[in-house]
Length: 246
Image (cartoon, rainbow, N blue to C red; front, side, top):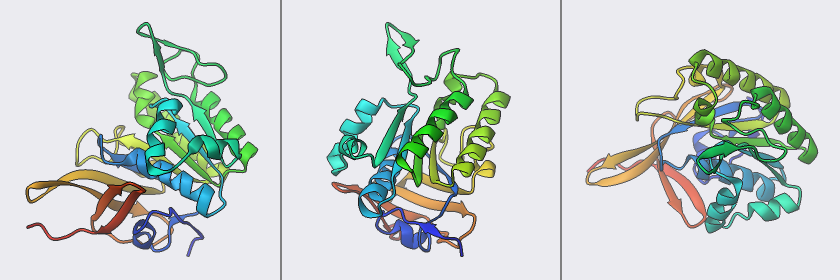
């Protein structure tokens, strides 16, 4: 069995029969409000605080200022972890000013002509080496549509990203917005390129809306197959068996 990287999310490591296979690249797929960003930040925060595994957070959508503020509600002080050298933050999110995307210093920014996937990956690897990262979270690749209208170029960038992340030997989570509840990704190839797929959904349980999480595939390990209940509370998320529909 492959060596495992524990998420630290209650119930999820049990469903993964020990955790994510070390060094794998995992797709985190879901619609808005399903908890993708929380899972990725919890994965990094737990790695730094519980398992002594530094990480790199790459924001390709939300600004890091907003991410740091939002994650504090769960008790995860990303700024403090960054100051301690336990987490590196890479901001590649678009900055909107006067309805135009403008360049932020030292970071590749989606939507600019100067942006290339190679420049972003170079920065990611630099930060991985600097903090000796064992974990990486990229949130989210959906914004590649800001850079390319050509689906072929987007798929080419994704292939380069996955190959490059595997070379880092870090365990990597990569988020993508799924346009419908039944689709795995946005660009039709993500599920094939990556080593694992986790699908997060909003569903109806009788008259109540609930969140679920399902492990679609995970190379290198056995895992639980059925959808599980996902609960988001004051300390982040936890996973448990899905109760029968009433």
